Image (cartoon, rainbow, N blue to C red; front, side, top):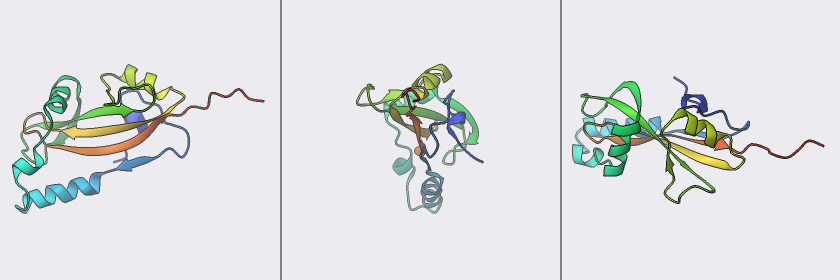
Length: 139
């Protein structure tokens, strides 16, 4: 399975060479430690109340079962950080909003968090660059 900016609510790919970091290996390590009993449910199901609110209200549904409780599908919540955005970032609520942010000339950092709306499991899934369009005129 590949994950690119096109998977994010209307985001367009950033300029060539834009970074993308997948945290799947770290996620799998945490899940493995939980299943071995080395981490408790309290250790891994600790989503902040605001993250839970965003997950329930505007999270992007996935087809993936929660790796901890198995009772619900995880959702993705996207946060964007960069110039002219609040210090706490912006929680992206729609494809249109993501497309608008992707079109900015400033480079932005987007973080996608997977969240279980039932048990509060959460883990950083992906980080990628958005925006950074070259606005200079040719010649």
